[in-house]
Amino acid sequence: MIASVLCKAILFDLDGVICSTDKFHYQAWKTLADRLGIYFDEEINNRLRGVSRMDSLNIILERSDKQYTQKEKEIFTAEKNGVYRELLKSMGPADLTDEVKDTLAELRSRGYKLSAASSSKNTKFILRQIGLDGFFDSVADGADITRSKPDPEVFLVAAKRIGVDPTNCAVVEDAKAGIEAAKAAGMMALALFGDAKGCGLEDYSLKSFSDLLNIF
Ligand code: BG6
Ligand code: MG
Image 1 (cartoon, protein in one colour):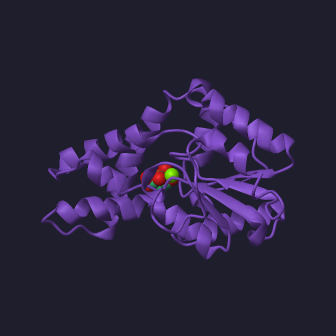
Image 2 (tube, protein in one colour; image 1 turned 90 degrees about the vertical axis):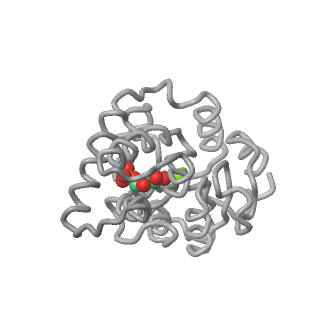
C-alpha cells in the first residue's frame, strides 16, 4: 500500500477503465465515416480515446477533402451519438467484470472515496447500464465541463464534489490525454491500458485493474 497516506480519493475514467466501450465508439464512428466516404480504421479510433465528441469528429475529418460548417458537424456528432446510444443499450451488468466490481468494493472498504470522471456525456447512461448507478461518491462528466481532457476540469469538478483536495486524489486512466489532465490537476496519475501506459507522465503503470489493491 504505497500510496495510501496521501491519497483519500480515487477518480476513475469510465470508457476503457471501468468498462469497455471502444468497440461501440468504433462502430458508431465507422457508420458515420462510411456514409461520408471518409477512411476510418481502428488505429484512428485509438486516437479518439479520452477526446471529446467534437474533437473526435475533427480528427476523423482530417481525412476528408470537404470543409464542413459547425452546424453540419453538430448534425454529424448527433448522428454518431444516436448510433452509439443504440449500441450501448446492449450493455448490462455483465459488462462490469468481477475484477472491477470486487476491486471497487475493496477500495471503498479501505476508506477511499471513489469517483467517476469522464469526458463522456453518456456517463450516467453507461453507469446505469452496467449496474453502477448511485455507486460513486461523485460523478463528473462531459455535461459538467466546457473543456475536455487533457484539460484538468473534469477531475477538479469530481474532487470538489467530494470535498477532497486535488493533491489527495489519484486518477486511473487509459488515455494519454487523461494522464495529462490528472497531472495538470495536481493529482497522482495511474495508467491502465491504452496510450496512457508508457506515455511517460504516469506515476504508476498498472498491470491490471486489481493491481490498485497493491498500491492503495
Ligand atoms: C471519452 C472517450 O470517455 O468520452 C472518447 O474515451 C469519447 O472516445 C468521449 O469521444 C466523449 O464521449 P461521448 O459519449 O460524450 O460521445
Ligand atoms: Mg478512457
